[in-house]
Length: 207
Image (cartoon, rainbow, N blue to C red; front, side):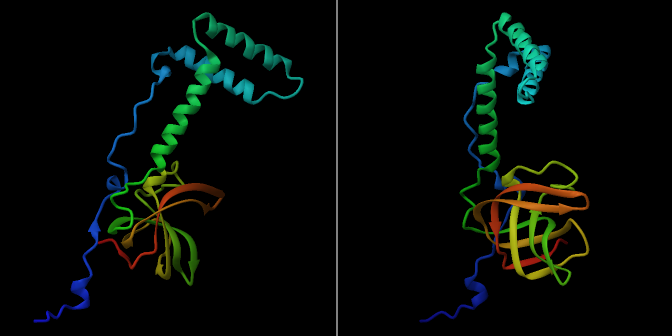
């Protein structure tokens, strides 16, 4: 007997997910953080050394002398300034990797995800390319979310919007695709790092 199955039955319903689901479930490996054991005054001195040394210009002997004096002060307290700066870079790099890592269980899966549409390209009052973000104000009025909390969406059909942050659902195959997008606003641009991409089958209003 041959069973007759409709095209709609052959297409599995996309899995409805939330933004927390886009974060990898496996915890990041622990990293030693020497700054947790330091006094607030020591942290402030370290910040000042960094500002002085990053801003040094040829012939700026005053800044050079002040940075050396502050280094000596911390070293007298048993702190290795160069080692702390190296550890800072290591911690920043680990946090970057965590923020950009994707949930491999969702990559190449059909999902349904709600969020706010932040237009990147408009045609005839329709967004044909946009960022899907979890909160109103993300990327413009507040610091950008972690890269794995943003989806870069290309939708040639276009979705009609009247302004920023239209609430929508997107349905489609989720991709792991790292990119940096430029978001324009009234007085400048913001660069937003993104870890996910989608060319949705459906974009519809959030109800």
